[in-house]
Length: 284
Ligand code: AMP
Image 1 (cartoon, rainbow, N blue to C red):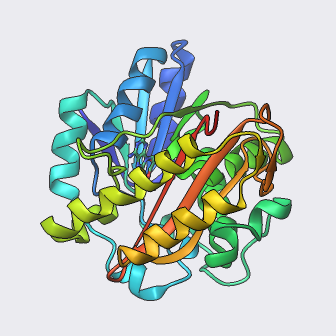
Image 2: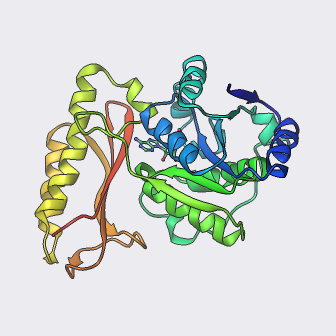
């Protein structure tokens, strides 16, 4: 049975009891409109922890674009059914007031360094501060032993690892591989806003990234990046970025030594919907 709690106090008293009985807690934070990617996170947590908590909260502080926030899909009834079917134990469903009792102005900031100003940080100013603000609050409420997130949001995983480090939070972190549609499109709640035709077209993002990864070898990789960029814009995508970076620092790589672990990353618009994707173990 899925238990649904909406306040931090009821959550604390319930989870406190679970912990007293020696149960370890796995946590999967989400913004809802759940898909297989989210459910894979729930299953991974269930495999490893006694008790699995999922949260659904569309966090206003991480949206730099008000339209994107307003249009974020909300499907709470089917989300609850999916969580129940996946065997999730508890859904935490707080209101904005519950998580931000002091309002949304003058919130704390976190020292996340360069991650804040590159790629997603550059194109979505303030986004990662918002992510840290909400994740910090959710972690304080749930107090999990283990946090599960998706590699689909590669930079976000790096930001959260940094948050855990700078806040001295002793919580294990696991990132699971990206779950994809049969055509390769990374599953995303935002895909719901795409027409059937554009869902098919959007599979070109992953194809472009994998082709890019296969095409590079040690040496200068500018030319391959340019080809990928031209292909994406030629296919009608508006590009925020497509790039190859060091997988552990996210520093852009132009001259590859053939050994450094690489990640290929992209953020593009199809119509007015912004999609991101990445491919790890890129090259050679
Ligand atoms: P969201 O609801 O988009 O905030 O995502 C909640 C969690 O699910 C985050 O840790 C995401 O990285 C993860 N996630 C989203 N899409 C996928 C996917 N296609 N495969 C695996 N994890 C995902």
